[in-house]
Amino acid sequence: MTQKQANLILATVSMGWGTSYIFMKICADSMSPMTMVAFRFGIAFFVMIALFSKRIFPIDLKTLKYSMVTGLLLLGIFISLSYGMKTTTASTAGFLTSTTVILVPILQALIYRKWPSTMISVGVIIVAIGLALLTIGDDFALATGSLYCLAAAVFYALHIIVTNRFIKNVDPLKLGVYQLGFAALFAAIIGIFVFGDLSLPHNGLDWFAILGLALICSAYGFVMQPIAQKHTTPEVTGFIFALEPIFAAIFAAIFLHENIGLQGYAGALLVLAGVIAASLKSEKKEDETISQPVMKIKKQTI
Image 1 (cartoon, rainbow, N blue to C red):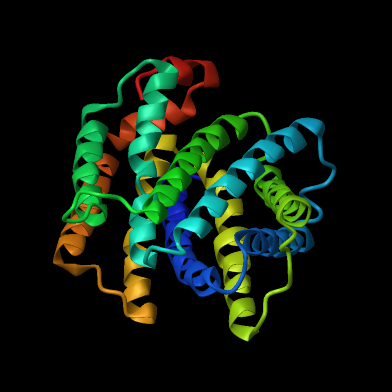
Image 2: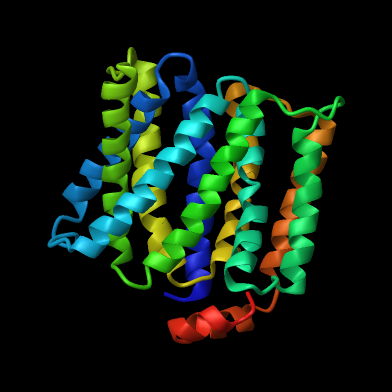
């Protein structure tokens, strides 16, 4: 798989995840976050087991250990996002979560003690301005729901970085599938033994939303992510995923009739401009970086 193909797949993943805010908004008032997470990832896990049973067995201890870590991060992402969406619009939640695009290069810089390239730095600044226009109101305050969404972005950034490291040592398909199972298991355990609120979805619309989350956003998205991410860089992955809120805003406008206003749309355009600016940095340089041994990758400027 070439980097261009990997980036295209990640773009379709981003589009699929853009629909997740619609589905989560449907579920937000009718089921608990633990129920939503347990069912979406549980269904996705068993679907992927059925489709790829010959490729994901046998399973080794290292893959299970890594899958537990990424599964726990998935739980953190979507529990935070589920609580956040109780008091925010689907569009706003999408853009708040996309602060991942800023966090990934910053965390990478801290890990490798090298500041990102000039174009990535420019992209981060542009995206930061766009996100400010999208999320900060006239009183310069952020609601509690917004803080939950920002917490989801932190988990999201950690998931991208950790996944990038793990897939160098284990089969990305196995990691992608088993992390779904662990996320569902953790959510079910917490839902039953801590909150005592794990129950079946109540109606057909809830089941429709859960199946959408399970099949489009989880089974496809979180399995294709590690496979494609193996052939690109975590920074580019983060910027491609910054397109997710653009898709979320489009779908929210179409299906939920949400309108984020002139300031919001201006911010959306800046986010898109920042993504393009960072993604158009020397692609040749990225290809060379990916093709070198793992130890050399760690020594390069990212």
